[in-house]
Image (cartoon, rainbow, N blue to C red; front, top):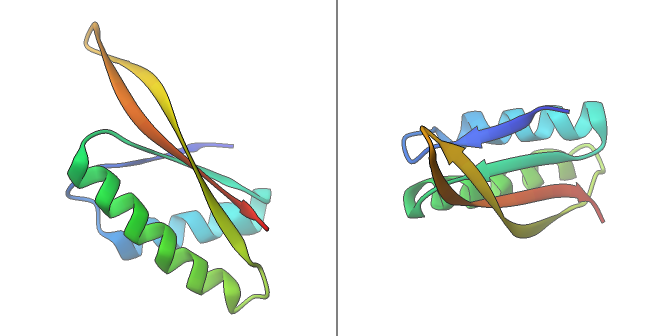
Length: 86
């Protein structure tokens, strides 16, 4: 399963569609965001995706966690969200 990476400039509806598609195909999705703007877009996308998936009878929950990512030799803290059926 691929990791969905979200930036502050990501369109929340496009990310929501990606989340819904991955959940439908694989049963769960993982989203990663670094920075306040990216986390904001990721949370909005998860809320929108939940609505999309409810139309298909899939009730999902969002599980947040922290992770570390190495970018250009610098370790950054990322917020990871797992979206899976309730």
